[in-house]
Structures are given as structure tokens and as C-alpha cells.
Image 1: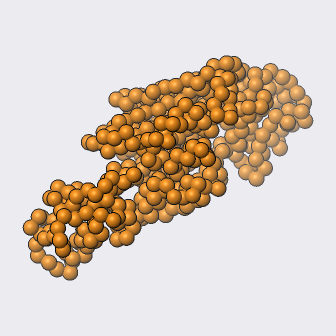
Image 2: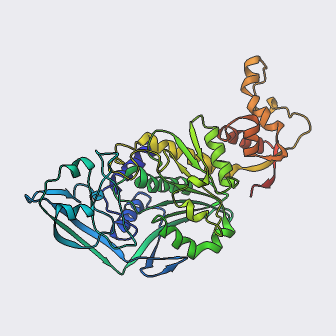
Image 3: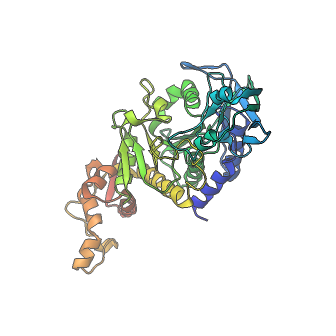
Length: 431
């Protein structure tokens, strides 16, 4: 089974859960993710309601198991059982009958997308309501409508989880996504599924130069709570960070750069995408929208980029009922997994190298090139010779990749061979 298929299966499992920024559905999501990586443990954290985190306060915990809207004839117009998105997130408990003109104030829809219904929430201001298609809204008949929302909003806690996989050094690569959106496949399920798959890949690496920290938290408030608790450690140890979201569709790839597009993470992801033969879009930080807003905020300044396939806010299904399991695919998830694995391998190998011989080394006697030369063999060995030509202690592997226009995943096995036979030495680690 491919990694993409495994990730898609995780998405199918967690898609039905009514996640929000707090609540039991978040805990159940972590239980499912944990079941897929039994050898790796999420360290779970519960932040009590009322806790001050930076300029924010963790709200009361919200859980809801039933919600529906009945029409004048007693038929259910919308039901949370059909889709969690029919309910406005964090809706207050409600049992009320109102005429249509008053009930309409609690109904949300999209006039410009009349066949789908929106994802709406109100975490910090008390509200209740329902979501439906604009076409359905226009078909509602006059009369009294009965709204029932059996929710509980009470002091509790907000849940987040993290995995630390130690390496040879305490320098860390930071990977993040979020667990707070109900029943949206690309803009929720794909991120945690990719984090889970990458945790397994990193754990099974034969050796790790870096330590890897993978964090899943509710978007915005969860990231803020994590920063509030861990900022000093993060600033000292994180060398590159990647926020992973909307990584399951099969359209394009996207990078949302850091504030000044000048971090190590910017270099890594841009190099991998530009040398992987895939089309991709680049966005400046002013087009941000996910947790890179927090990790890259002034004073936090974690060297982070955001990686997507179709970027949030851009693809038409975003934050609607159309962001379903048909929008993502094993192939789309596999593509995102492959890109991030290449980023990980690049960072593991990204040092400055220097050749140990004067002039070109004799490669044939070391079995690195064919011993008979021809036009064809010259072309086949050109990448190896170009790699050696620029291994002068001045360029790291990313720099060489950009100069000789070769992908790093092609260069890595060549570096291994050159190190093994003593033709390369490491000048310094990339920091």
C-alpha cells in the first residue's frame, strides 16, 4: 500500500468527526492518528479554559452531539447527522421556535456558490445557527421553524499533541498542522494525515542529524498556546519550520513564504519544488492565512514557510461542503508526502563539501564512472563532475543544486559515494 493510500485512509477515518478548537472530537482524532503509528507517541497537552496565552484566552470547551432545524411541516430542513458543517461551530445550546423571517438571521449560505454550504464558526462571541445551500434557503416556505442544538459549552480544556523524534543534535526541524475543522478533507484531514506519515518516515530513518518536532494543535489559539509555553526553546533550537495544510488535492503545489522570504525553510522548500519537475505557485507573506501567522509573528520569528497544494482561500471548495473526500486523493497526498520527504533528506545532507584532491579525481578506478569514455557516458556522468567542480567549500548542497541545475535527491547518492571513497570532506554544517 502506498503512503498516499495510507494517508487517504486516515482522512476517511477522521473526516466524520465534529472537530472544533476544543472538545472530545479533537481527542478522538488524536486517538485515531495514534493508532496508525503505535511505535511513536504523541505527548498530549490539555490547556484549561480561561488560561491566558499571549493576548488570548482559551475559551470554554464545546461539544455537540445533535443539532437540527425543522420546518413548518415537521420535516428536518438540515441535520448535523448529514454533515457537521450544517451547524455553526460553537453554537450555544438552543431549543427555540421562530418564524422564518427571524430564523433567517441564524442561517448562513453562499449566494455565489448556491449548490454548496459554508463552514462557519463563532468561537469567541456567543451565537447559534445553521448552514445550508443558498438554493435550499430560497426554497424555504413561510412558517415557524424549530431549532434544536444540544451542545455543551462549559469550562474544560483545549487539546494539542506533539511528537519529538531525537536526532544526533538538539537542532530541530519543526512541522505543524492543525486539528480544529469538522468534515473538510483538504483543509483539515490532509494536514494531520501528512504529519502522521512523516512521523513514521522520520522515526524509521537509519540516522538523523536533526531532531524533529511535529505539532498538531487547533489553528490560531492552539499555535498561540504552544508559542506561549515554548517560545524560548523554539527560538534556540528550530532551524526550519513547515506549516502543512491543504495538501491532499491533485492540482498544484504552493509555498507561502516567510515574512521576508529569507529563511532556511524558504531555501529548502523552494529548491525542492523548483527541481522536482512539478508546477508550483509562490505567495508572499502578505497572502498568509494559516498558523504561519503565529509562528512568523514579530518577536516569534520562527524560520517557517507554509506548504500547500491548492492554497487556502484560493481553491473554490475552501471552507465549504464541497471540500469533501472526493476533492483529495491518494495521489495528491502522495505528492505532498514526496515533496516533504525530499525536504527532509535535503536538510539532512545540506552541508558544505570540499574535494580532497587537486584537479579532477580519477573516478573510473573508484567505480564511479564507466572506464570506457564516449559521448553518451560523458552526459551520464556530467552531474557527478559538476557536483565535484563546485564542491570547493564555498557552496552548500542547495547552492550547488541551483548552480548546476540538478535536483538534490539526484545529488544525495552521489555525495554518499564521494564521502565513502574519501573524495569529499565536510567543511561545516549548514545552520
